[in-house]
Image 1 (cartoon, rainbow, N blue to C red):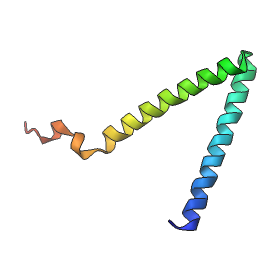
Image 2 (cartoon, rainbow, N blue to C red):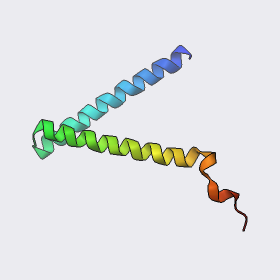
Image 3 (cartoon, one colour):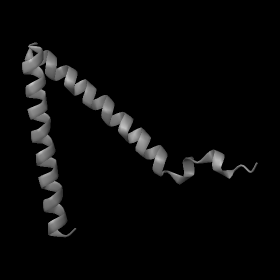
Amino acid sequence: MPIDKLVLILVSVIAAAGATIWVAAILLASVQVSPVLGLTALGLIAICAYIAWRIIADRLTNSDDNHYDKFEN
């Protein structure tokens, strides 16, 4: 893997992590709930969103999954 691609991936991951922490801090401050409860809820929401994202992406890109495309009208 070229070094410039690796650096781009690392910078993107660090920026996304920073943005996630920033959004979580703003949401926790605005709702004024226990930080443990808020972070747990945000973690569960993030896991569900990730799973949904992976399922949708797999169904859109998997050519083996296009069962109904093989039927002729």
